[in-house]
Amino acid sequence: MGSSYEVLGIREGASEEEIKTAYKKLAKKYHPDRYLDNPLSDLAEEKFKEINVAYDQLIKNNRNSNQSYGQSQNNNQQNSYNRSSSQSGNISFQRIRQLIQSRQFREADRMLNEISNRNGEWHFLKGINAMNTGQFQKGYDHLRNAVQLEPNNLEYRQAYDQIQRRSTGYRNMSNSRGYSQVNTCDCCTNLICADCLCEMLGGDLIGCC
Amino acid sequence: MFGYVKPVNDELKIREYNVFRSYYCGLCKALGENYNQLTRFGLNYDLTFLAVIIGSLIENDGIISNERCFVHPLKKRNIMKNSQSIDYASDMSVLLVRLKLKDDWNDDKSYKALLASIPYRNYDNKLLNQYPETVKNVEMKLSDLSKLEKDKSKDLDACADKFAKVMESIFQSPIIKDNTQKRILGQVGYYLGRWIYIVDAYQDLEADIKTTSFNPLLLKYYEGNETINVLKDKVKQEIEVALYYTLSQLVDCYELLDIKNNKEIIDNVLYLGLRNKMESIFSNCCKEEK
Image (cartoon, rainbow over all chains, first blue to last red):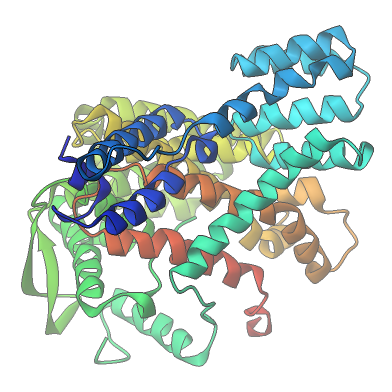
């Protein structure tokens, strides 16, 4: 592992302002909240800790106050499946929530499939379970059903919105890197495609590329 | 199935563009040198990206040299030489094409596939000896996938998962020794594979209706009487969010990699190229060509 400066990706002797900016950017990028349903969440957490240690070290050199980002938000979210379980009332739904929380997705899915009462709660849990096992289409479909069945349930709505938010999040990151849709079907592209095909066959249509 | 993973050239610096080209040409040459001239037709962008991303984790992976090649006899080109990652990508390229053709022959008794597989025939043992794990994994997942195809599965996630696992095995290259990096690479490959599979299925919708070929999207969403445009629009509405979500997971994984070089190129591919590819497939701009 490199020095604290390296961890934050800044030059040695950077000003407090620079340290803070770099820290904020990285802390946001690797925040555990972003990796909640990512199979690499443990690695992100390591990285997040590393950044916090580096930041604390550098800032302590300058001053000795200043607290870094906590993980409180994360804890809130982690508990969320448990918190509202009382309202579901159904014993097996409670059990399934526990299974999902302890990441026993297969068992949770087995139990879900045995339940015939497919209400909002069922779709919600099925959706959360699917999202956690990389079955994003199913996850999205079920969460949408849950919201449609019980539009007033905040928990379902939040989970559904979270997917929408992440999906827009990717587009925002892409926009901030200068994305603009290139029309790939214009005449030039067709020419270049034709050129590539010719080149594959040993000829060349456009000499310069 | 291939050619979805490439940069938006307009947004690359000229230096970056040249490096990317040198990987592309390097892979083409490596196929010719490590295998035979005919396997060079199997060259594609997805495997070029594999070489670039694996190369980005290795310090001093290969050198660029300016050479002629018989495909372009007139002009010298930048070609990446002595690169482990390119050699690896060439091996995987041959493996994938070989297994794909084998599968086509077994499933449809397609003589075209049998004929096309001739240049690939003699390397099965070499690949199996060199990458026993990878070959076993890839073969297994592909046969799982063709089982799902035979059963006419409507389960888009399950089908995409099998192909994603193929890509996962391929991305976990044995030339990367650090286990953490390998694990991340595998996850990047997984999400990339998932995305490729679904985008490819979407692109094939029209053709698959005509040939009544297997397509999980058709089985799931096609009612049999709507026009292709209505269908495409409907499917797009359904799958779009989950696809962007996949890309979002993908880049989150990628950001954990310890990239040593060519970060700009990979950023371009993952943040701009993939989205660009998907959106141009979604916006029906190619329709009037038919």
